[in-house]
Amino acid sequence: MNADELPPKQKGSGAGLLPILNQPGSRRTAMKAAGVALGLTAFGKAISPLWSIPENVSVDEFLQQHYKELSDDDKKKIFARLESETKEELGVDVTISDPPPIPGVHFGYAINLSKCNGNGKCMEACNKENNHDRGTDQSYIRVLEMSKGSMDMEEGNTTYDHTVPQDDKFYMPVQCQQCDNPPCVTVCPVEATWKEADGIVVVDYNWCIGCRYCEAACPYHARRFNWQAPEIPPQEVNPNQGYLSNRIRPQGTMEKCHFCLHRTREGRLPACLEACPTGARVFGDLNDPDSDINWVLKNKRVYVLKEELGTRPSFFYFFDS
Amino acid sequence: MAEDGDTHEKKFAVTIRRPAGPPRVDTGLTDLQGNRVTVACSTCHSTRKPDFENKSPADLKEFHSELKFSHGNVSCLSCHNDKNYDSLKLADGRQIEFTEVMTLCAQCHGPQKVAYDHGAHGGMAGHWDLTRGERIRNNCVDCHQAHAPQFPLMRPTFKPKDRFLEPSRTDH
Image (cartoon, rainbow over all chains, first blue to last red; front, side, top):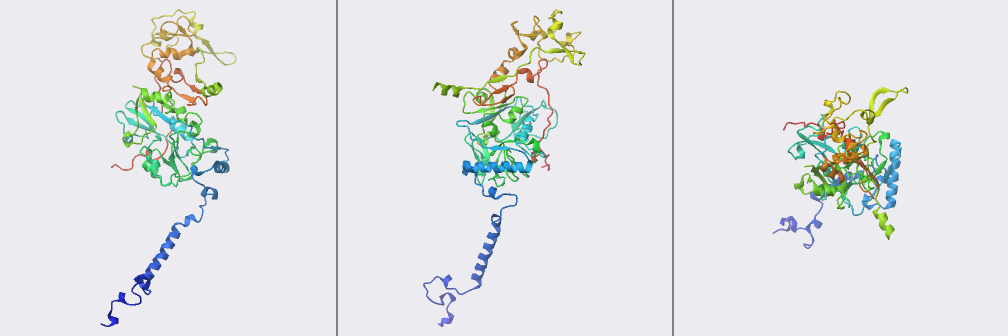
């Protein structure tokens, strides 16, 4: 047997070495090298937005940490920056704060469906209080016109345009139910939304990446997406603003009802409750056994929306009889 | 210690709005300054004898006959005081002032009054937390017209324009 006739693998030096180190330059290795180079280029291209800051984002904003990681000093600077941006863009003096949850308080909200007549004043109050876009008349509340006998909110109609209430209908306002087991929080890939100690689910508008997973996850259709930055006439801007609530949101972020936390954490009633001309809304502390909300839960026929999903809302609906 | 306890317990007031007082009736006349002339109920009723046969405005031949009335089976003098028309009267005949109208309504509307006392009936404004601020509440006649108390029909004036408000684009 001639050595030239040996199979290629047995050729060459030292049988103990790994064959790959021993191989002469071949088409395969050239392809590998090209592949690595191509991969690195593609990766570099993919993360290239990270090397430059988008035009509409300041350096400070780009480098801003998650709300929960901010020190009091950081917050002071950020709130001042946001206030000056509003001053610059709209010429309005606003105050941004972040009132913390009141220790021991868990907020609850209930609506009397025997009283609600679908007039929609709550939606309007929400729009004004929370600096929503005026072009689309955005609101955290949707009032659904429902056929009597049905509790299926997916069958509700929001486009009704006639005097209310109609005899064969009832009216059900739906907003964030502030679930104790919130699906929107679970799905957020960047933890930009979370549940606070008083039960309110909040959003860090500067941390949100706008993927809209939470909007898809919410069974109450309670989350809204800012397709564009809200447009508000300067004289209509509500200057009392919360960092986690009604400050003017940037484009491309999610938002939702926050029980007017800039009001309610200071002891005040939510704007939608004060606006309701039928007195259908009851708000208070679920942990206080003597609160109005607890009287309703103990004495009225109460139900929660889509109870079977196990979201455990802090929001309730009830009837007079 | 006692002081600490007091500050903790200190609560702000819940103020229930009240009617201004006995109504004034428009005579349809104007004075020399052009102001409308209004009179107290007693201006006419002190000289006219009460007639218990009159149950509703439809029974009246002059004055008040155009008044829209739709309030169950009660008659005028169920609530109006035949002894003093500038006040009202309870079912047991005791006089009660117009400003205390809620006590009068509560005689028949017990469940509503119970719900009201627990903040589950009637609009309000101010604070849910009375240790931090006051609350102002409506009274019965702020929302209910005494002679036709059913809450009026309303026309919605505000509609957000979001995708849930668009009619569905397909028929499937």
